Image 1: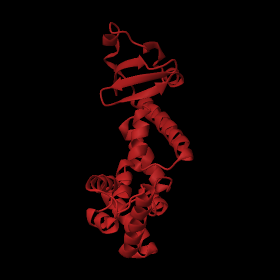
Image 2: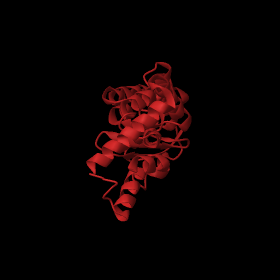
Image 3: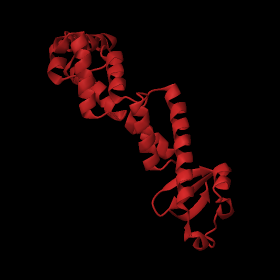
Length: 217
């Protein structure tokens, strides 16, 4: 591993760029691994370190320290909420961990069942099946970093518990009826413009057009 640059990100955090990837080390780690004399580097001094090759033993120690911190960071994040593997990876990389360390950390958490995309998706579907449309639920899961395949599996699992597609149709019908009541919609008095605006509103909520028209009659 060859270090190309070390720059200060804050008083105690430093970004290290190597010939392979970049990562963030604490000031303590810089001292521990003997890199403190090179940080921070001015533009003039960077040429002096561009050929600084880190011994393999030190490289392994650096990555072991990064893995330990990444695991601790993940624990802090997961204490407050569940994350999908994709979102946790993004959080770790944003915190300055290299992608290889982030991937290894998330994989170990998956093996220990601390990160479980299917469990997260099933929990979300159960929580929102009565107040969100199928399309909105699937869209929300996608934003959480859950794959389309896992989202579909989660939805199918919950629907099997709830009574299948008929149960989902009933729930979506009830949701539309509730929203129409909140908007004080009356099909007998609503003019064309109000009907169009109401349909557009419900469509944005993710309800299928055919069901919207049927309930609005």
